[in-house]
Length: 227
Image (tube, rainbow, N blue to C red; front, side, top):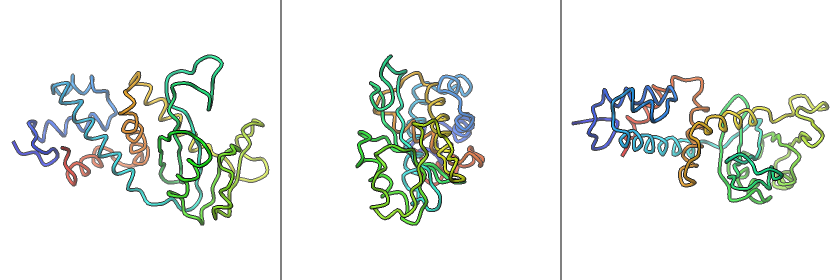
């Protein structure tokens, strides 16, 4: 059975397109299995392959240029009482970059020491960009790296939009963070080895939020069939 979207597929193109429509609607694997009649293992395998393709597309993004927001956050189970933020246990640190009126980029990192976010910014943000961040010391040194405009908002003083500089905030990257955390919570836990692909799935969906996601995914699979 020939299927242009999946290498050596045992399901028809029509069945795969039905599967893809449900993925675009952001249904769970259980719901997709029930609605398509496909085997649960088949659905899980196709979802894993699709998330890999999404992650590959996200990694091919061009460097950010213009006005960008940067932020770090922690993803994982509900925090242990008394431990929060950078001291929270069993959480994965994630660094994010958001180009205003554009796309987002996320990257799970080993830790949020100063060198990690600076390296991510240097590799993803052009030097002529305007960078907005919070007051964390991890962003110290951006000007020394060649970024001439680095503006901060002081969250420690309950400042979420600068009263002194119009447009100085990181509300949009924080908005994506809220969206990603809410979406990932639906999975009720996941193996650490799959976290990156689930996170990149959120990134891919967000970056194509103004497009017909079904058509985007269909084109993606046609140009680079799942295997």
